[in-house]
Amino acid sequence: MKEKTVFLDRDGVINKYPGDKKYVTSLKKFKFLPKAKKAIALLSKNGFKLFVISNQAGVGKGVYSKRTLDLITKRMLSEVRKSAGRIESVYYCIHRPQQNCSCRKPRAGMLKAAAKQHKLNLKRAFFIGDTIRDVLTAKEAGCKSILVLSGKEKAVNCKNWEVQPDFVFSNLFSAAKYLISQK
Image 1 (spheres, rainbow, N blue to C red):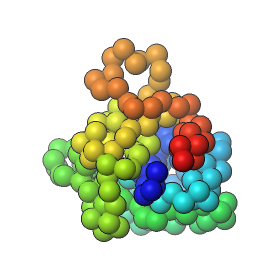
Image 2 (cartoon, one colour; image 1 turned 90 degrees about the horizontal axis):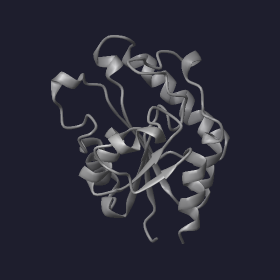
Image 3 (cartoon, rainbow, N blue to C red; image 1 turned 90 degrees about the vertical axis):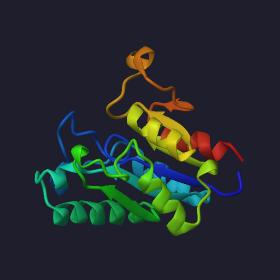
Image 4 (tube, rainbow, N blue to C red; image 1 turned 180 degrees about the horizontal axis):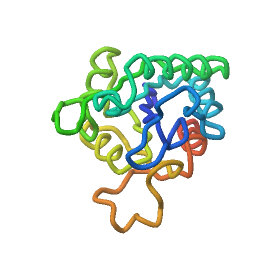
């Protein structure tokens, strides 16, 4: 693996999934999943460039403010740095679904923007998410998809998935260990 890029969904991958139709609306509600910071540090230490790609429609719906989202992001990045991890950049779609934008997952607009801005080869990248929407996003962008079962999606639903992920792991740490083993 020459160029090593990993895109990470946020809720359900890095932090605790808030529940269907619910949002992480405050610093207090942002809780890292077990070993998530360790996984990010492991990937960083092994030369992976990491990017967060996340729909945050709660801002567009007025459930919480852009300022609150920025504070949560600042805290997340600070905690990741304290754990020896590094996230290159964070991309959010704050639009509501009915706005039909090109950045809202499952569309690949945020990944394409990151690829253009950071000169990344999407065909060599991985997208780690906790929903089938994330798998669809990876496929649309031309990335390999990794579904983690630490958030919304559950393995028991696999017969109903409209698309199969390239890989499935229990959490971000398991996915990270796999990726660093692929030298």
